[in-house]
Length: 171
Image (cartoon, rainbow, N blue to C red):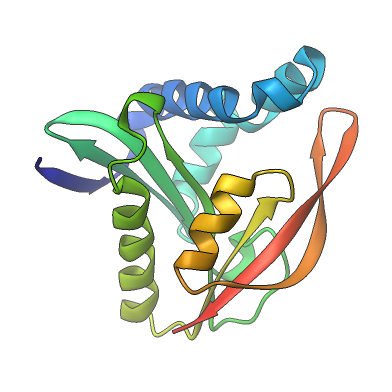
């Protein structure tokens, strides 16, 4: 299996939108109402929103390919782009999503290693993320990768307020 991780640019907008909607929907549709899912997907992954995020120098998206097939993506944030107020020494992993057909192949670990490598190159001391308290598979993955829960914050899925657990790892 050949693995390739490539930074996204504006030409990748449509593909980024497709994989973002697909993977988020596949991950969370069973635990959320169709109305709340639609509201969130329309807000978070509309063209204007994604264009703005791609244009932000403090955010970056990366596609992961397995044997030349798009398998998932990573989104990281630094500085003011972080979804919570953190120090300048922090890098946020906002999203790691792997398509269903590629799960359990270790691709999430490749993306996490990419985020850690980027954080180190940028002299960051902490890598952090928020994960929905009901996403037990992801929580276990982050714990296995050395993350420790340090807090909680609110996340809005349509009209429902949910809890995200904040996990951090020192570099």
